[in-house]
Length: 209
Image 1 (cartoon, rainbow, N blue to C red):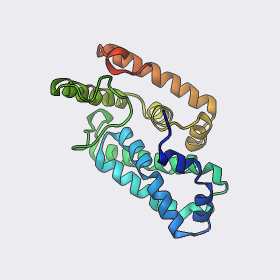
Image 2: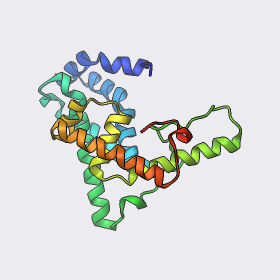
Image 3: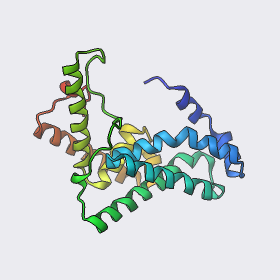
Image 4: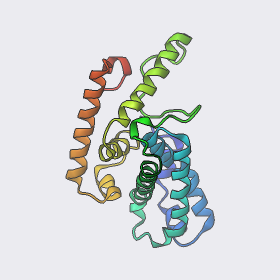
């Protein structure tokens, strides 16, 4: 996939991170602009819930503002930021389970929100009936993702949707790379079985597990 201007900006943001770490408020604000959508998408994929994704994103960047001066290595900013986001996702999940005893499978998608990740095959100019079918498949795929364990879902989202390297995921989750690879393997295998159980093939969704 060709890099967007945003991707390029992220790749060359070391100087921005350095200034932000030194207390430059303008640089900190630009980092939020660069990374907000990525963190929101991660949280949205984790919960399939707009309000929770917004809550996690806001808390993540408030924490970034407060703690970035303590970041030891500029090159570890991405994994450091995802560490914060993951911790807030886990916190929100614990709170929901404790206060309402809501299981993961009962979480509902946010109204009118776009689901990023798997792309259903087909031309966007197709007829309305096919577009509706694609939308239904996209939502079904998200529901399949929610059937994974919390640990597997974190890794699959980070690797398949966010494009993090195994090393970065290991740093973000504070586990070994071998553990990351193991969770990734079982996560993708689990998704494949879930899709097979629902009679969804890679030809249907345009994504190969």
